[in-house]
Image 1 (spheres, rainbow, N blue to C red):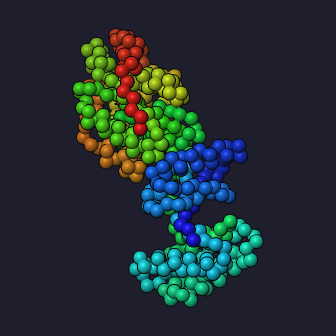
Image 2: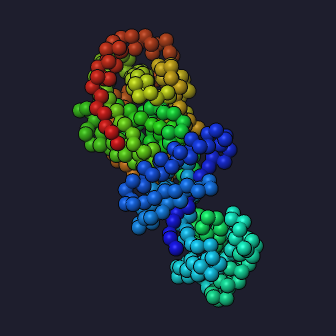
Image 3: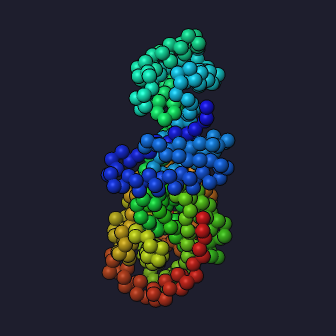
Length: 388
Ligand code: ATP
Ligand code: MG
């Protein structure tokens, strides 16, 4: 007997040619996510992966639930294809479950699959005989084939696998199977969630953060580094570009109309991110914007912001309510860090009465009051690169 973890993956509708690529990347990503587990092995068999040879099961499960492309996992006993051995370990599973089960009667069923047609019993026979044997052993058991509290799964393949637990995982596609994008990562709630959503579709991320030292402190930078680090639990390694933004903000503040500052700043952020993206061989930008959330996120503002770049801008949260975004942030584990109260660069130079319906020609006129090319060049030359 050996304890293993069985991994199921999607996407069900993958086209034939993509499948081997998808599987190769997924295997790579699973292995990376388990790097911290000594001597662990990941093997592939019949459209599944199995993790073997580990001591800390909880740590393996924790890591796997965050690997995009995995639909669900099951901790299982891998045993000999021998009915007596199968019965013995089925009993262990029931016994263990019953210890933590506080109702008197436990309803159950046995669900069997026989992939190995050489096995002498068919799936019906396995279920029936195993079920009968369990009923004899445990008086607290009662069969319910429709809505059982416990389903004992028996899979007869190259070995026999026994399990009852199916743990849902993140789904999506393996990171690295769908190109690369640059994430504009602030210290807020939204952008980490936006990055997570795009990474979930298999896109590798590189992160860009604008920092306005000394208006924003080292602690606010640390906060963003921490957010990026939390994202790497899902995305694997990521580069974070910390871009000095103070000079740009000061120039805009001195030379441009106050109520346009936010939108002008946002255009600079996009332009710089696009340049970084090109250098990093990323082909799209990702932001945490959603319609109407703040003045700079009215449709008109988004149009003017978008005009600053030619690269596509992905805004996965565009139709989300703030509450839904907050819930998602909590689920993925970024929320607690995002709400730490350190100032971000935008709050400092925020106009009292920002334009909500900017006109592109007016914004372009104001933008011409500063030397954008030099400012951008300077910012790019002074990037601090953090490898996570
Ligand atoms: P978030 O919660 O992500 O900070 P927000 O609701 O505060 O978003 P804005 O401040 O208008 O909205 O920012 C919109 C988007 O612009 C952010 O989601 C992020 O993608 C990007 N952004 C804002 N500030 C920064 C920054 N300092 N560095 C990098 N990207 C930023
Ligand atoms: Mg913000």
